[in-house]
Length: 325
Ligand SMILES: Nc1nc2c(ncn2[C@@H]2O[C@H](COP(=O)(O)OP(=O)(O)OP(=O)(O)O)[C@@H](O)[C@H]2O)c(=O)[nH]1
Ligand SMILES: [Mg+2]
Image (cartoon, rainbow, N blue to C red; front, side):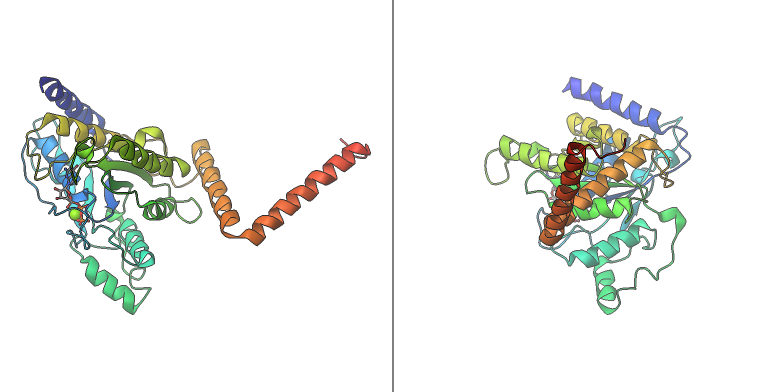
């Protein structure tokens, strides 16, 4: 236990060092299925930073048919009021909670997600109301005013190890984060919660093998769209079963907060001028091209036939020695 206490202290110091004097404040949105642990992660990070249990984000039963969080909720400065001398809470990022995805119309849900990312949806807005407005008009959200200070700068995709990863949702989130032509460049991180359930027996336990499969699904989804290895973490949140203080839980959540706080070369850069942006965009384009080929057999066959024709032409030209080098 003492080992975890030391680790938690070290991680807290590292978070503080990473964020000290930070001028560009991050707005970090937590997205995922209903019951995946978004609100719990916010509460856990806030507790780990302050040592005080002040669970402002309402967390509920897992895997509910409808989300427990219904409103878009901003937790400014990681919901921290006071954090020791020499460090200003304004340096901490704002965490943004939203209703989890629970079988909603995915297209409508993506509209809402985009609206939040563009800073169009105010703190406290009800998701149920937004969905009702969208039913009336598709343009409801795009017509709302933009608040520049509320634009999302990073996303954490939250999934639980106790259920299969919602790959469709994850891809939608990453696609929106990248923008239609790869022009948005918002970094997406992965958090796999309920990892305390791994190896436990009974209904709520998860087999090691199953956990490994779900983890690798999540990591490969992140990889496919250009995200690096270290943008992912196993998470154990405080819950009705584990109450603070628990230094293992705090060390884990602080370490994740450090991961998402680090400023990367691409952060806030939408110019696409550096090489790694280009590399990411090429990977996305390749992935999109693969999707087109997979979804459209006729187009796939045409591409295949064209490639075959070009190949045959080159071979023939070489054979007859008619190519001019
Ligand atoms: N054992 C365990 N329980 C967790 C963990 N994270 C969350 N929970 C529990 O899972 C349930 C759902 O957590 P929430 O934080 O409400 O999930 P959410 O993603 O905010 O859900 P919605 O607001 O409905 O979208 C609650 O009962 C939490 O106590 C975890 O890491 N381990
Ligand atoms: Mg919630």
